[in-house]
Length: 112
Ligand code: FES
Image (tube, rainbow, N blue to C red):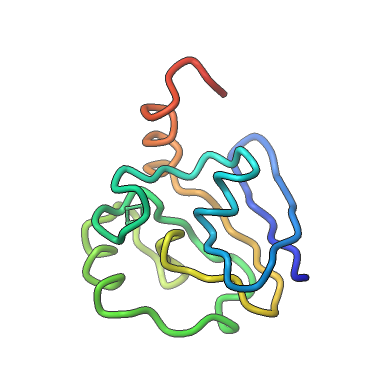
């Protein structure tokens, strides 16, 4: 199973992932601070993250994901939406964006 490394500003979390699981599902399972204002249905941009390593191993984004990313802050070539990215066979390094972490804190008051 590929290893997925999540990077938050003050810590890193590395987990093994079953292929097919989304980055958002994985983040929620392991307490990683990835926001999900719409619940993971590609209707916001709060799960925005940067794929630091392994981007080329992922399928291209759908039009829906591209449209949603247009709403995000600090979009880079490595930007993806965590709820739309499914883990494949390759390891990934995923950096959380500030907007995603801020949303997570709003969704989990008093935690983290
Ligand atoms: S959680 Fe809303 S687009 Fe991913």
